[in-house]
Length: 217
Image (tube, rainbow, N blue to C red; front, side):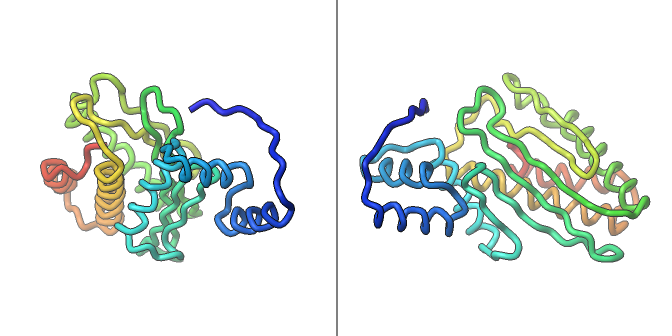
């Protein structure tokens, strides 16, 4: 949706209240005024759709403020997950949705900070295995948009794409993203906790989730 700059004459008291609301929501004046006007005239903006999706995800995860946080100024939702590992390191899943997607609709970033070489090695192993399983079992679902991956220091990134033969409304998309993060987190923790005695056991859990429709995003 194209945006332009306009000059508006507003009462100072109104602007003061708008600024307070924007600050409380972690956004800015322009974004909030645009959202209020869009709601008033009944227009669904990309930001409104993204907000709807993220609010649904918050509800699915239970809405715990110390676990999940939505930053509407950058279209990002952050989900924390503590690992049962020495010194209790924390993973932070960041879901970003694009305002105007031309292929992938967004990306999932898995952020981690640890000084443990052992944990870093196991995380790297899991990311590699996860990518191999997806390339083997789900690549054919995304004929138009190939899933991309990257691994940098303290961050693993995967693009989010909708299967070629499907259309996701906000509710469906919110469940797809939530289920993906939940399954990924569960299997990752199982892997780190040595629950799996072989890669085949990890693969079996992955396929069980995939066949249940929980990993198609």
